Structures are given as structure tokens and as C-alpha cells.
Length: 213
Length: 213
Length: 213
Image 1 (cartoon, chains in turn purple, yellow, cyan):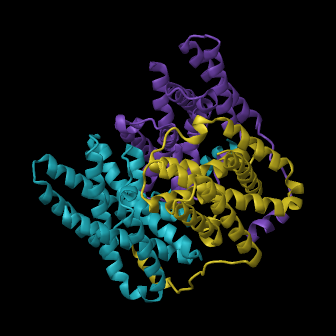
Image 2 (cartoon, chains in turn red, yellow, orange):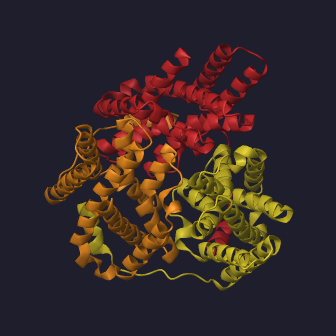
Image 3 (cartoon, chains in turn cyan, green, brown):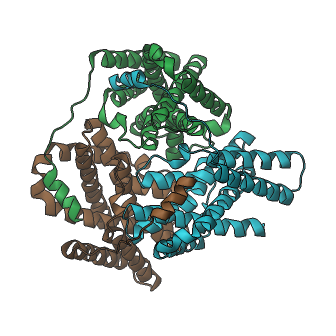
């Protein structure tokens, strides 16, 4: 599907740029920025494909994606000083990428005949695991595990997409509707600072138990 | 095998709870707790299956496991304040899970015709890699690499299990014996604080060498 | 190829030793040192094989490699106090391993019919991902992403190797030439402290944008 593929290419560039910019804060060299950018952009789909045994991986079949993410990472690094002007554009592209990755991930998983729960989960993996790997490489607790309406948007997008297909809606319409709705939800979440609750708890006595292990 | 499967279900719930509780200390939101809980519970078996190319993964074939670990993670988060009363129960369940995961992992690896060294290693991977992934996601050096009679118990359980099978003991008896012995060893290790040695060494001059790289 | 295989065995021992020594600094116990050493030595090839779906993994087919890396890790731990005398030897072995891993990784990927870009990338993965996993397990930002003429040497070795094969040079000569050139480049980089640039940038306003996510 041509529109979805175009969105995909824009999204992996945006994600590669986000990875490269975080790598710069860790004082990585140019090679490191390219690795972190590429892992951020393609890592979610790669983990999805490993988990469902879907070979060859996307970037093995289409190595041009690698040139693309490396180019985006280097461009982001060179333009980093001006990135603050691009802040809104970046957040919008990132939101678009999140929902596009989710729909693409659902499609790939569904093509293997997986249960719908697994299909939605693989959509989420495609959407959020790239950023999670980026954070592990940059040695910090993954943001996606701490702030939420990111993963939740991915979940809602996947549920809506599968639900529409289940109701017999044409694939193109289901795709467009899911992406538009997910995108809107993500922008609303950004605008209003929506978030899932963080439970407060004194877990210190439990920690003691762990220490004894 | 019905008993082993029951133990497995109890064990993945206990591991999901342990992951969720550690996630709470990192101030993760509800989604993050569910991810870390699920990865802790199912991550060891997933890595084993990826390494030996055993598809489909357990939770892809049985998505109900995912609902199960998510439920356990949420329950643990809600009950966190009372978890200290459950400390002993938790440690026992965790010990049971460790040995049950090990035996199950050995069975899966043996079914692929792998060498017995690989079978034992895959048993250990099933037993301990979930906790290792939990610690990586929570941005700390994996506990299992620092305190030991955890992995060692898994190793001893696997060796005993394979040894009994090799001697011609019936599968049911070998399973029960290995689980009971491993469980007892783990409880003894907890009770007496048994541990492998940590070697002390001044590695600073070596570090310099690394710095030069 | 016998010489390449011998170099491979020396290299995995050197990498296992490097992993064990870094684990000691994190006060890991003996089991942890063996795990980190083995992951450092065999992790690059394992990730390569997972990514291209090349089963069985090397150490599953040849479990003796595991005994080998465990032995090297324990030996390194016991000899850690004297390791500073071995500093130069270690750096040379590590450089040899890097280029040997790269050539072996290229061969494995090429045997699956992958695109040459993927072949070179898999050579680099084989060469550098073991050290990257070591650093993730030891909870630090991967060195290979921060200091570069390590990965760059791997890249250059792979390009030279594939280029020679493409020009019709015999496999043995291409292998020897690529390893010798890569090795020399690595030693030059060590000697003169060559490195890729680290871009300086004020990314703080971008960070704010991320915070808003």
C-alpha cells in the first residue's frame, strides 16, 4: 500500500533522528549515532520478526532502509543545533510513525496466522520496541515504560484496526481510520499531558526479600 | 504433564509479580509494569526458543499466558503494600518457578535433539534469563550475575534431571526428583546464605588498557 | 579453513577474558563472569545468526565452544592480578579477533545469499556486538558506540574482503589480506589514538521536547 509505505519511510527517518539525538547526549561518535539511530528505527520491526520467525527481516530484504536510517541519523546530528525549531514537526512525525508502525506490525503478524492478541502485541512491539532498545543502549530506564500514552496509543490503534477488519471494513479504510484516530489520540495526549497512573507504594520490605535471594 | 504445567502457571505468575514490583521502584506506569512483569515471566523461555529456533514461541501458541502475566502484574501492583506479608510465600514460589522453568527448558531443548550441554544451558536460560531481562529493563546490573546460588541451583537441577533420564529413570520420576531436589537446594541456599565466591582483584591496570582501545 | 578457525578460537578466548575482567569490576560471582565472558565471545555471532535466521547457532552445533569460553573466563579471573603484564598481548589478540570475527561473519551472511550491504553489516555485528552485549550486561553505555576506530576497522575489513572477492581474488588470499590489513589498521588506530569525531551540540531544547512526550 503506497501511502502506508510512504508514511513508513518518513517514520523510520524520524525515529533514526530521535535515536541519533539521544546518542549525542551520551557523547557517542558518528558510528554510534548511526547504530543507535538505525536500531531505534528498525529495532521494533526486527524484534517482531524474530519473535514470530518472520524471515528474512525487513532490512535484510531491503538494505536500502539501512542507508536511509544512516542518512537520517547523520543529518540529525549535523542539524542538531537547529532541531529545536523542528520540535513540533518532530513530535508529529514521531506520532505518525508510532501509529504507522503499529498498523504495519499488525499486518505482518496477521499474515502468519497468529491469534489476535498476538497480532496486537506485535503491532505494539513494532511501534514501541525501537525506542525501548534506544534507551537500553543509552543506559537509561526505557521512557516508554515510564510515560504511557505512547504505548497505550499503539494498543488502541491496533485494537481499532483489527476491530474494523473484523467488522468487514475494507483494508484501505481500516488502515486510514486506525492511523488517523491513533494519530489524533497521540496529539491529544501530548497536548493535554494525558498519562496512565503510576502506582505509589512502599515496596521496601519486599526489596529486603529480594536482597535475601 | 499436568503437575508440571500447574507449577509452570504458578511460577509465571510469581515471576510476573516480581517484575511488576521492581518496575514500581522505577516509577513505571501501569503499562510498564505489565511489560516488565511479562518479560520477567516469559522472557527466559522466549530467549531459549529464539536460540534454538523453536517456533512458534510458547506465548504465541498460547496467548492466554499473556493475559495471565498481565493479570499477575496488575494484581501485584495493587497489592504491593501488603506484599511484605507474602514475602516467604513469594520466595518459595520463585524457587519453585526456577526449578520448574529449568526442567521445562531442558525438555524443550532436548526435543530438538541438542547436545546435553546445550540442553542444560537452555534449562538455565529458561530459569534465569527472565530475571536478567527484568534487570536490564530496570537499568541495573543483573542480580543473577552477582548473587549466585540462583543460577547454580538451576544448573544442578538440569544436571540431575538429565542424569536421571540417562540412567533410564521414568520421565515422571526424574521430573519430580529434580524439582524436589532443586527446590530443597534453593531453600537451603536462601536459609544459609550460600553463595559462590566473588573474586577480588585490582583490575585497574587492565582498565587502562581498555581505555586505550 | 584451518588458520581462520585457529584465529577464531584464540579470539573467542580473548573476548571471554575481556568480558570476565569487566564482570569482576561489577563484583559478579564466578557464574556471572562465565556468563558475561561467554556472551562477549559468542554474542556477536549469535545475534548475527538470529538476524539472518541461520540455525543451528554455532555454539549449539559446537558446544565445545562453551567449555572453551567458560575456561577462558575462569582463567582470566584467576589471573586478573597479573593481567596488566598481558596488556599488550590482550590488545593484539582482541584486534586479531575483531578482524577474524568480521571475516567469518561476512562468510556466514554471504552463504545465505544476502545483499552485500547486509553481508558487511553482519560481519560488523559479529565483530562488535559481543562487546556491546557485555557493556549492556555490565550496565554501561556500550564503549563501541563511543570510541570508534573499533567498529570502523570492522567495516573497512569487511569492505576490503568483499571487494577482493568481487575482483575474483582467491578466497584464501582475500581472507589473509583482509585480516592483515584490518589488523594493521587497528594497531595503528591504537597507537595513534585515531577516532571518529564526536559531534558537540546543545540538544537541551530537543530534550525538552522528548520530556513532553
